[in-house]
Length: 384
View 1 (spheres, helix red, strand yellow):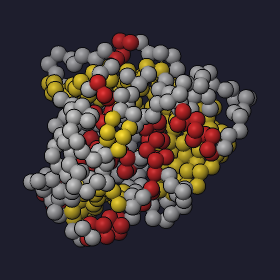
View 2 (view 1 turned 30 degrees about the vertical axis):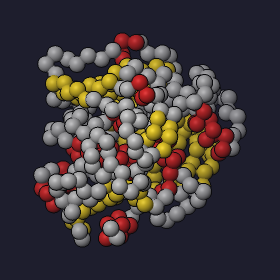
View 3 (view 1 turned 90 degrees about the vertical axis):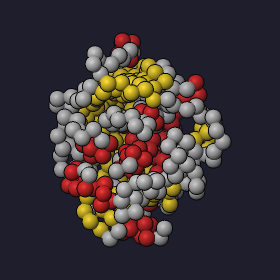
View 4 (view 1 turned 180 degrees about the vertical axis):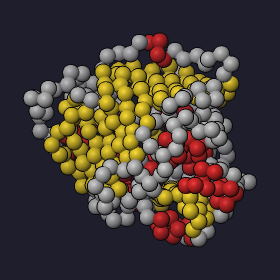
């Protein structure tokens, strides 16, 4: 399974932190002090305008998307397929520490191991205690305020993935909302002891597997505290990620000063600066970002064709072209016992199917992914 697909897997399965205005406050409203009423537009503005806070918290993830629970000891094969499948299945716990956008640490606590992603200014470390391996990279000066660790994944990094945060998932899911999406504010909820607006997002199209998304938005700071994803036709959440404890006190600076343990295998990765070469894309606050939908665009790091996106909103399908020398579905599956267990044979390839996302691995090495019915992926593959 290609690393390109896995970089997109979180957005496709359970769809980058955002930063803007000052944090509105840090004292939660009490249970007897209801939040001021807000419209959906006002709650969305609250999310969009909050700044990267200082916080410490514990995250709990539960998943009922149709995958068997895999051992939480960190994938033994050391590949991205195992890491992604393991994180998508079963419960997980993580500790999160932030001191603004440039100091971030996420620790995924497995039964017998721990995964860490640490940013300290322009220094980023990705570490797995399972095999005592680390990846280190130095961010370029134009890296801006981004905190999403998925942007630091690099071909050859070889480090297990870490959990996202409710903020990360909320931003990605909100990006899928289009004019056909129904957005409402339900009665407030309490998450990690804080009063929160309950933002309910419901796709009106039947062309998606997503039934609804509930995002709990902290009533004072605007920080997303939890995300619940329901599959179409199901009453119970297929996926939930939520803070179970949260403090807006500034974490100790030593938490961001990571050094690999003695004997660790360390891989150094060079990250090219944005704008070092001319390529199609769109502008962001930190530079030009290549657009996945531009035909013929290639990844400057790998030279491989970039993915293309067809459809819009909840019905989007991402296609990852076959890389030179890449194996087809049969070879990928035969070389990975986890994929043998998680996929089924379909015309033209193998299908990885869950309640909220489908992924098609074709015999010619292409990959199609989306929160859409499997038939839509098969049709997309046959059309190209």
